Each structure stands twice: as structure tokens, then as C-alpha cells.
Length: 541
Image (cartoon, rainbow, N blue to C red; front, side, top):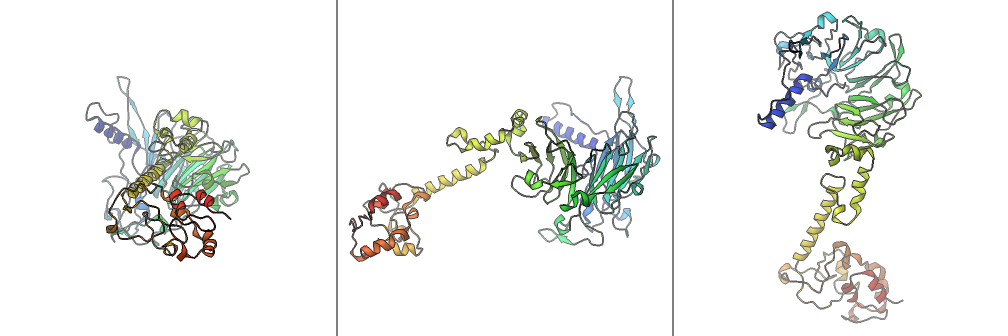
């Protein structure tokens, strides 16, 4: 359950928003799929950021929540985290956005007491049982992880926060006990996301906690936007904080194995974490999504150690090789090929990223590939040949081999074709000499020295200085072969190879157009032929 992905919105309200959007698209033609029943069901909650105009970084981080059956009655209850005042010198009433009237402080636990109607349908009804349950967390909440760490059959709760984290043990009678200190899983730094997973295979759940930035209220920096107005700072202005790995030793005790496991060797501003067997070796690995930095893929080597393979696996950056503002994260086998794929949500301008597992923890970013959004995606990706066909098939010269819009390589090839067409159009529009007789060319021809000195050449006469455009109005050039820039004789010819030999044979003043020197070189032959092989045949040694 990754925290910042929720962004402080309730799950019920999110579904209601989707229903409202669906209603807008159908223009009232069909009833909405969802409607907002939060207020009438008793799920009354408004997130409080504690903003006072000081632009503290935690104020823009939405809190997380959890859906879990804490009382074992078969329906999902709701736990929502809350913010608090970061400036201790001010009260909540002085905040820019004061809390809702009558709303108590701290996280809230709502028990699901659904009611069966006479017609057999169920009606949602939530009851705030925070005080009764003992789950009283008053910190600046960030994320929630749910797992039965002591194997007693009741889900326990770990809460991350800007400040001390907390572990609440489910007593099985509808109440919780704060066992953070006894379990040894406290962390006073800015933690965002966490996950329970059994990395050592001993049958009990271990705990990984993702940390964000080394931010403090006293060390808050002043930043401005592009027009000079006060704004929140970028995460790059602060140092990232390493995550922590806690091994479950049984008996309700954990041991910090961050250093010995190798997790501390690489870190970034983590916002999301998910566990899964990404390399198919039967051991649970970790993927940590970092905000504006390279993400990490920690592969479990089976000896209590992890190895970071984010860059080699293709999951550290986007397809363009850029870091992203990664936040929410999910893992699952969406294409049905037997391995875990990864889906990461980023900033709105970056969009979300889909990393498709090609096997053995080798991923490919197929976010913009058309087959991902069509029903044929499952069959194509399960064979692991779709990406190869999309890229390799474009090497052919036929129109049918060209990649469609959105496929890998299509944009680059279309840009190259436009450049070639533009060069051909510009070449046809350039003025050239009206006379179509052969002209002297070569390293000893008039103007060759100026050309070698770097004077700009013009396509009318290779090697001669370019006259003003008005001297030669545009006219067809049947005597000049229409060559691309790479095939033009002036570019392909390298005068340094033959210059010393020809100059020693005959001085420049004695040469005449159409003359043949003692080496058998005809100055005009190379310009007419336009290739190096013809020149080689004309030169005898």
C-alpha cells in the first residue's frame, strides 16, 4: 500500500469521481457507474495539510490510507491518515486551510458496519472507532503498511510519517497497541512508504521502510518559481535519506539489517516500494520508486543480501533515459506470461510508466507502445517477440515495414524522412549555371585552393567560389546529377590524397579544360561521374 499515490483522497470519493467523469462523457445517456456516498455512509474525513505559508515540503505530500478487515467480520474497514501543524508556534485555526469544523485531530479508523436492506441489498455504513480501538496516531502521517507480522491471524498496522513512525499490534478484540519501541522498528526520519514481505523465507514478515529527504522545519530553504514568486523547493535541494530493512526475529522483535543486507549502498528520495519475485528465483525482491532520481531494483540473492540492478534491468529511468517523479507503484503479471511487471505513476506531465518484464528481471518500457492499450497485448507480450518485431521489422525498405505512430523507432524514422525530403526540395530550388558544358574540377582546377581554405562551395560548379544569386537566376540543371549531400563529388573527393602527385606532374598554369596530364587524369571526368571509382580508373600509376 504505497502512500503518496493516494494523494489524500478517499477510495470511495475516487470511484465517485470516475463515475462522474463517465456520466459527463455519455451526456446523461446512461446512469453513472459510481456515486459519492462518503457523507451518507458516515465516512466523513477531510485531510489537513497544516499549511501556514512557509512552504514546508511535507505540505504538498498527500497522506495515504488502507482498506483492510481489522475485525475479521468479512468486510473492509478504512484507515485514513491525517496531517498536523508543522509550525509549533501557530494553532490550526491560523492555518491557511483550517481543519473542518468538528473534525478531531490525527488518523481515523472507520469500521464497516454495512446494513442489509429488506430487499436483500447491502447499504454502507461506517462508524468512527478511532478512540475505542486505541489506534491514536497524531503525527504527520504519510503511508500505511498492513501485515500480520506475528502470525496470530490478525492484520497489524505500520504507519510512516514525517517524524516518528509507529507499529500497532492488532489484539484481535477490535483494539490496537502501540509496540513501536518494543519491536524496534521506529524511525524518526521522513518516511513515506513501507511494505511487509518475507525476504529470508523463514515464515514471518519482515519490514522495509522507504525514506524521503533530509528535511527539517528549522532547515527549510527559501525557493522561488520562474517568475520570482515564493514556491515549494524541488526535492533536489535536499539530500535523500536511505531506506531501512528490518528482519523479523520472531517474538515481536525486529533487527535493523540495512547495512549487512546491502540496502544502504544505493538510495534516493523514495516515495513508493513494492515487493515481488521479479527474476523468478523464488525469492522476494524489492523495487523502490524515487522522486526525480534513479529508481532501484533490489534483487534478493538468497543469503540475506540484496544487489541493486535498477540500471541493468531497465527500470531505473524512463525509455528516454531520464529520471522521473515516481510516486505510486504496483506490481503484477498483467500480460499473463508468468513474471511480475511494474507500473509506476509519475508527475502529470510525465505520465505513468509501464515496465514489462521480459524474463530474468529484464524490463522494457512499453508505455507508449500501441499494443499495450489494445486487447491483443496479452498474446503479443506473452510471446516476448512483439518488441523485437516492432523494432527489427522497420529495417526493411518497404512501406509495410515502417513502424506505425507510437511504435519504437517510428518517430526517429519519420524525422529522417522529412529531413531527406527537405534537402531534396532545397536542392531543386537552388540556382545553378545556365551553361551545361563540362567545367574543370579537381585539386588543381581554378578555385580549388579557395575551397580547401574553407570557402563556401555552391552546387553549380564544384570547386569554384559561389557568385551572388542574382548572377545566375534559377534554371533547370540537366547536366548536374541530383545527388544527396553525402553523395556529392565535392564532399566525397579528398584532394590531399592526389594533390602532391598531380602538382609535381604539371603546374596549374599549364592545365587546360579537357586536357589529360601524364597520369591520365581528366579534370572534368570526376565531376561528371560523381564517384571515386571513376576517378581511380582515370588515374594510372
